[in-house]
Length: 458
Image 1 (cartoon, helix red, strand yellow):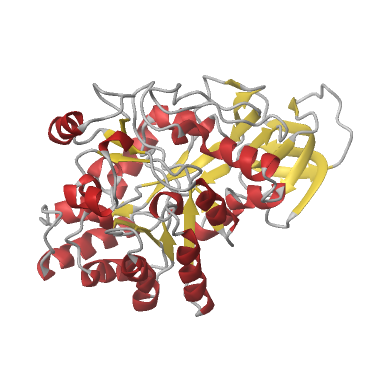
Image 2 (image 1 turned 90 degrees about the horizontal axis):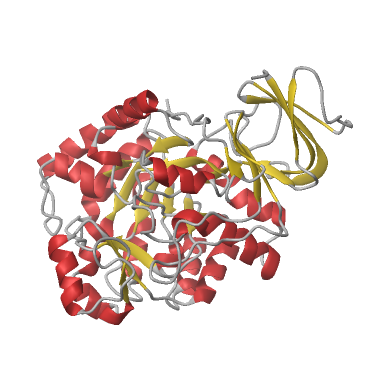
């Protein structure tokens, strides 16, 4: 394999400089060596040449919120969308429930298709390791001290921050997660928060999350707005975020492109009081996995999954579509997939579709965002938010994580189980490069390429 590669005849979109221009990118090893506007022949000694044919060349997508967590099939679905880096360990769940060092070491040993970094998770992992195994009970101060100690070690071992899934551990007190969040703040790393949200219009839960920034100095990332507030509540949610930002607090947020969310059948989210508070009906629930995959649930099937398949997903069809667009038009809201482990033919279509869906709807069809702003929200903005300095950019010396796509044909194809195939890759993705290696060529997977790396924060 030649040492240098050229991607020629591209409309290069650089979200950092906010400029787009026609040109070529020369890749050496795993970094961008040169950007020029020369006329490049079809063949050149010592180079592999890839013809973008006037399509968009952008930094590889950085998925700010996912549960890819080393699952190869998840990585494949992300890669097919142009994702080159994924942030794992969200919603308070550390990958495989192991230490950050253990996860990183294992992934480096196995190899992976895209780059990974991870939060250390509070609400499931740290709580369990500290002995706070009852999600409905508050942790003792001694348990909180152990959580802080474990979190500190994970941060020293390169975790990108601490994540919380407060809705999944409703016994968590405000004092508990402020104490743990302060560890990340003192380390200069962000916290990602799936809010408590006990019922619609529960603004105290959002205030509790935003107050973490005020109480600890942490940079707070409010997780998946479309799943938490797209029920006619988005305007008030965004007003509150804007108010905290105006006061100088570091508040970011991410959102997907669906209102129908999927979470574990056995989680507190699907407790009876939550169903009543949110005015949900069993007919709104579809099994994402397991023996009822693709089926609408009744009370009997729902209770069976809760008792016998607690780790399988249930999709709840709820929400107001317009709220998605309000969220993703709001200043500096990033795009996220919430991608998670699922067998082929099962799971949520977001895993394989969210980014193509974003470009199709937000840019081409509704024209709510410019192309360059849309690229920024899923590349440079998450890189800056999470603290990745050499990716999400197009400049000499940046890592050669890149993707080429056709803005006129990019389209999501995956659909919900029971309706279609949740794994179908999108149209319009022509090339994807991970650390300088071509992983997708002319829309086809290069099977021999697994060039992903672990991104440790030190």
